[in-house]
Length: 313
Ligand SMILES: CC(C)(COP(=O)(O)OP(=O)(O)OC[C@H]1O[C@@H](n2cnc3c(N)ncnc32)[C@H](O)[C@@H]1OP(=O)(O)O)[C@@H](O)C(=O)NCCC(=O)NCCS
Image (cartoon, rainbow, N blue to C red; front, side, top):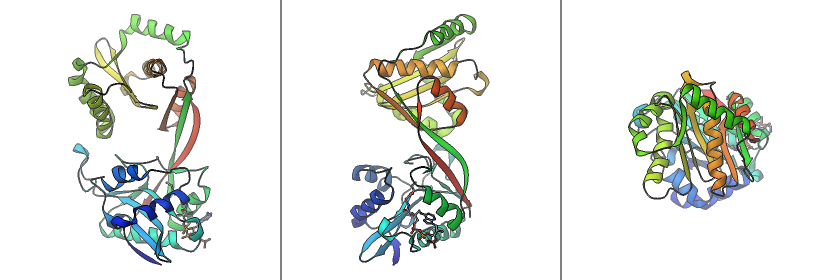
């Protein structure tokens, strides 16, 4: 068994291993090209492959910042692993352990201090390891490699057929508007100068990047699948939410204005817009237990649960 950096001609074999090992997270060649090979942080050395019997039988995809993420910078002490797998015919022969030792040795030598699976922005596939789909993987990571689980991320989905805003939410909306001057409206150009700094201040550069991508589409001529709402309280922006296609979020409310129902109103108004555009399903990949309760009110059900893991190098 030989471990070497990824080469351009490995694509089909890497994807064959990906599909056989990561059965619940299959990707197309085009997603591999756009989200892996064209990621400016991709380097072939950080995608080592294990070769045996003349073919690729395993891989680990690690990322470190080669270019800064806006003002979040290069994050020189951090690294991420977003995908890995050993072909089932070759598992339990030490290949997974050898691949991880190889990549972790490289990251240590570069002075990285932590490696996380798999909350890397921009191009993560899933928040971490699906605990139901890959139970053996958690054992492998925790016991054979030394990772620990930091927290769980919940992915949920909702069937929007016949979606209606319940009367109590409409009542809440009326009360909040009358008593606190809270309004929920589709984004306009007039929101942008206040909105973009609001997003950076409260939610960071990754959410800024997300919002910017949708707004570029919305104002750039392909608005069909996008709903972007802004919440104001007495004229000041206190929250927003965004959606494209079936994917809902992110959405956020100023920490000082939480627990007044603003998030609930944004969520229900956005889902209503989606169902009126004949989007029949809504999902997101990542939330915690508190927000999961809010989503459950709107009919979201748990789909997957992920362990987010870290190794201190
Ligand atoms: C996790 C994975 C890469 C391990 O690869 P591997 O080559 O089989 O791992 P190794 O042979 O090096 O295993 C080393 C040790 O890890 C533990 N381990 C590995 N797989 C395990 C499993 N399925 N159940 C329990 N323990 C396991 C064992 O302690 C093993 O040592 P042992 O075989 O002597 O008991 C492989 O199982 C896999 O491809 N899983 C699916 C892919 C996946 O979940 N990707 C993550 C999506 S984000």
